[in-house]
Image (cartoon, rainbow, N blue to C red; front, side):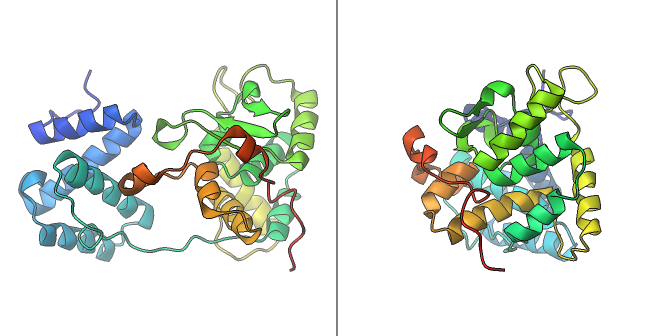
Length: 283
């Protein structure tokens, strides 16, 4: 059964095959194909006939139209894969220009002050786990009990972004809360089950919990649950953890630099200390 409602042209079918070979999720495949179709509609020609200047004009048009950074970033990922891997055009970053946007970061004290406002133990544990291990909220909510390796102080992330598996650190402080949470709720498979059997708690509920707690501490910085993940990486960098280790812990994998992806051993990752357990930073 096709992943999209529209029939695929031959070049988009090649794109789909390339994504399937790379293990991209069906959702990612749909998004990338959608962005290529938007390019075709704007240029009024098949994507494989688009010239570099036309692609740059399309990206500029989307920026001026107020399209979000994250949406344009997906466009760039799709175009890099299509033009450079499927068509082998090898266009540089001067053609597929990715807009720069620095993520907002909270201090450790700010994060803990927000989490301390959350009274529900399940919600508090979810937020602490997300920060202390640098997870995407979807990754936290899809954790299973078997993913928590307290012996080696690791968390296994199965089928993360790009359908990739990885290991990240398990904080000692977070492990204490996870054990307290387990003793109270007694989950049997999914670590954070929701109301529907076999499904995790809904992400937007956690987003709302975070925003309410943020308002309670009168924090005016723009921040969402995903800010916890950016803060995790920043705090590790400030604690002198090398960039390549952080890349692996975060599960970052830019299409143009996949060949440089660094795989670290379980022993190496086990030696990394979560910023939640690290030394206190100066205010």
